[in-house]
Length: 93
Image (cartoon, rainbow, N blue to C red; front, side):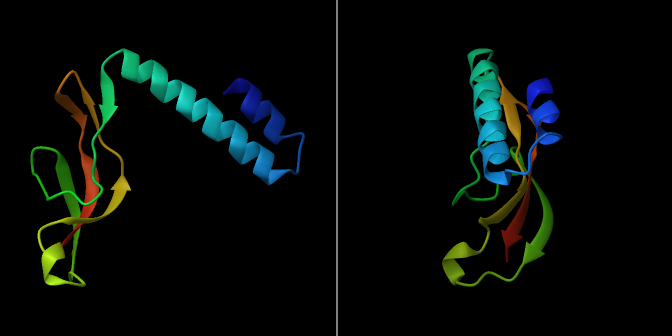
């Protein structure tokens, strides 16, 4: 992260900065996964109070999206099958 921040000050190439930050994030997530941390999957998921924190309820575009996660505002994480941060989501109603 220190190198990324240092390079941000010395370049105007936004695409290169983004690529660098994505590589650092991926490497960081790989290290966390080896320690038992994993992201809570919210894509096309049913709303589950044990994993998700509903911060908004929005009208579902279709009936099959009622009670499902429509948007993830902030990712949630689990450590060895225990929630350490709930995923903040918008739920269809």
